[in-house]
Length: 233
Image (tube, rainbow, N blue to C red; front, side, top):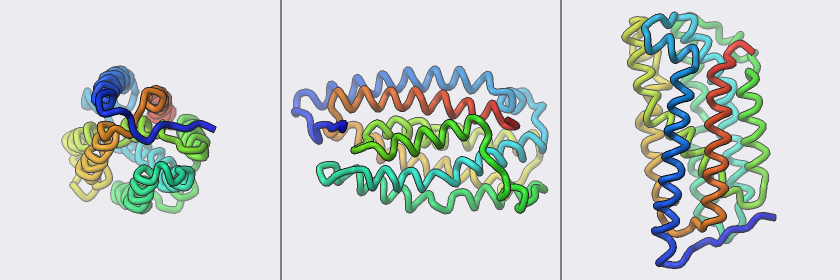
């Protein structure tokens, strides 16, 4: 069973937080380099993306987003009373996200997709790997490392989703109602990243937890890129 200190010393806490932010920043930089090589995002950047590309992206994102609230709920159940703040945060987060897949469904139908086909779809190889990893990790005792997963997933929503939405609109002439999922997550995930930053700098994270957070962020970043790359696999 993995356990973590719920607090660090007053002197150590700022140092741990600074080091953690620096390490996570390196993970994020590498993630952005990998995203630049994702085929659908390259086409989006150079203006050759098609409406079929956008539908395929929504189709694949929906299959993974459906699992988001369940794995967060499982993580909440895995925190003991010594990690009450993290359990409470996970419960709130799961409640906020459990309807997110419905926004994708509406966007998908709005650009000509079939709701029945979308709901009958399955995860691609990357999504299977990502969801499997998240559910496995969430079931571990006190899965503090999942804060690294949140850093990646919420960071993508807060920092990249709105830009992707605007570019899809620019190239394909889409209305706001057809990119609602991506636009919504700029604000919603910015709020989530703010809450995450408060936890990371609160003194609850010790060196061992920081190591697990960074490692989880590295794994999730790689699997998320795989999900975006393997759209038809």
